[in-house]
Image (cartoon, rainbow, N blue to C red; front, side):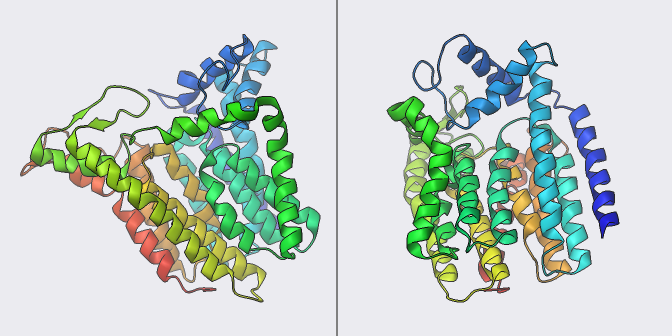
Length: 403
């Protein structure tokens, strides 16, 4: 038993040390934005009040700590930040390793899940330690694993589950709707469950609310008013239509670089209607599946995992914000999912690797000046960024294990 843990952890360390030694060549959010934010705060330009800051409050210490270490003569900001995320991943991988080998799956499925997680980080190396995405969904995954491994009929354990969940929300707000299916996984009475949710929330959000109060609305307003990002599915639809109409143009204004024109306006309006209904549909799915009585621990865990994956892919396809690092979010969830067979697991892992290859590496690019009819070859290539997401939605809706 101990041998396999040691072997896999050594393999993990070898590949992750390689990732640390091979940072991206061209762009990093850490260099471009995070270090600038940290220096601005150090010299008195407080987030939310004096400068626009697009992330929730838990990101502030995450971005600030590498500079504090730098100022004490240890390393440089960029290296310190990447090592900070690496240290977090050591904890995450340890618990992933422990959890996967406690799932009711064959040894083959367990080993392939861990190897998938390790290799996914290598494929997505240009984003793995370059932002907040790994720690964002890593915290959410820790919440799920804690709920699976620890008895949830004990109030303290349930408070920890909720605290980890609210911490993920305090990194990026996008996990907030998943509070509804998480509430349905309760093993406590409704009154004690609400108490656990409240206590977990206060542990995470209490201090930021005291420090910033209504100023925290800045990041909410920022995202509410954002246009469709250049990598979103809605933008892809606009580009396809524009190949025919020639009515649209791209606004050279970061960070979204949106398409503008009559088609972009109509598509944006349509996606603004589709998005809340898609998310509501996933939450209703989770409510229906998780509201059954007397479910076992593995049933609750699997259905909540499935609901979370459906939520992510629905968010990716209908939300106005989508970019390459978002692919990191589903990696720990797919790793933890107890598939019915190796064949089904292999198909989903292969699709995930395809999406990672298309969006996080330069190796699957195609020439921009090659056309098939009136459409550039890149349109057909970019369709593969989204088709696997549709397949995954259909797959997990139809998945009947622990239904």
